[in-house]
Length: 418
Image (cartoon, rainbow, N blue to C red; front, side, top):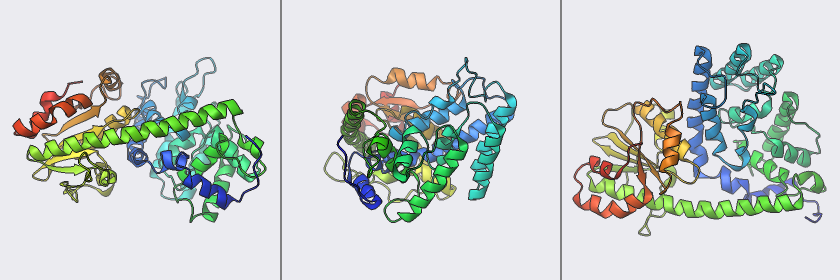
């Protein structure tokens, strides 16, 4: 990449916001991001509970922490390698939260205190305590979990973000240090405040900008060498992959909306009121209209607590009869089967109604993957397991179900038990 003329931070942010393949558009504004917050929060609660009860395993694999980190890494790009820091490395015996009970309790306390925190100083005090504990191998990578608990107070963190921050500010902060992370956090908050009108209270927007600078997608002022974290060949490969992901996401979004349209049509024909995810209402259906046409304008579940309601409103499709949810459908894309299971589990735990059926709607050929995910220890003993609907069956039998089906249970005839 050739040396660029100096540009202001305002211009840099404008370039970031207007680039269709920047993290701002491919992740921060994406529909799946909002769905992740409550799912991850519930997962963190389970980690705390497992640690407190002494049932947390001596390995990352199969633990409730793996559930949380998988949901985070499915956000892609900024969080793609977020789980690596938590893999159990037996030769180094790190991170030391699996075999060392006192360290495990300290880690659980950090998560619990941040879950319950309502003020910035409470979060900072919890971080200070985990830093003083000196747990080998447990560093500021844990901030990626805390970001999903307090997105306006805790910025995400990885090598690229730190390199981007150093490039933008001229700092020389280092990885693996809670002190340097907290210095970066102060700088991020200052930048976010300075450019509040161009960014967001959610620090993920600025984190994405720093990530793009850090991988070398955007060069800033005279710090081109520092901004390029990859040599030219690797940068080109990274940008090519980003472009391919954008194209794939667009194709999947179209297919996702088509499956939602089929489910909404079938639900209405089977005598149900139907709900489409709040953030999908303006998506185009198969007939050129929008998915909201013929769907409920408001969800008649007034008794739900606000945080539960906000999650339920993001389920892809719901069928209701007499004001009760009788079927819930999560339509999955290329990487979201795991997150879909978590959202359906969250829904079933929140509503606990009788007669509720859960369905994962997935591309053909992914039955084995769904079975593997549901075989995880966290899901093995689910009282209410989702069934699988594959895209081709839904496409093929949509009209027949509408014509010959009489009750919501008719959809089960084309579903597979997993």
